Length: 200
Image (cartoon, rainbow, N blue to C red; front, side, top):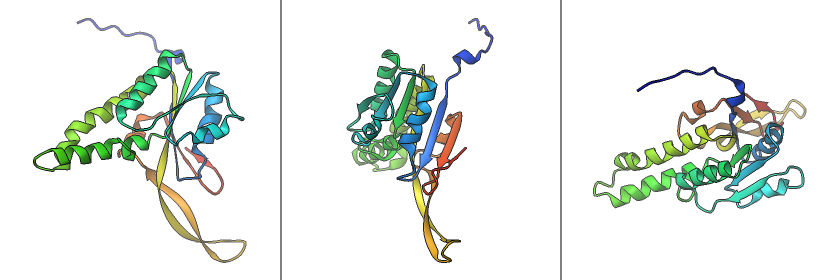
């Protein structure tokens, strides 16, 4: 088998970005804000019951609502966006592929129930290849891809400098997705709830 190297060019490079924040952190708005600067044709896979459409007056994008969140549904949606010639794809949110209806965790539970051993360990052998195929579809998509992920949240007690009182502050601690998924992206950014800061 012959292998040939070719000159690397930036023309072929496409952004793979993950945005992580707790609820109310501005993931969808930020994703669409960035997307509009990457291309004129933007598609959005919506797992939030059409909630992204509240930004239709601010951004131009086409949307596809998912009702269940099997990794294969994401793969099919990514392929449909590629065939339609979109330049940018926003997946809002990838967390549902992990913990939503039909997502990886539910599939593992169902596979364990079907097995004689009832072991989730062996069930992962069935589900992991599906999840890996979804990640591969994101990475090989012929367009820029921005995914949002919910963050597991925690509350910290901090002193408010203005009032002197102790107040709770909501912080995100890690994405709701498979451990280590963030390494698949070029850029991963955390969004803060209180100031909507984007921290790379």
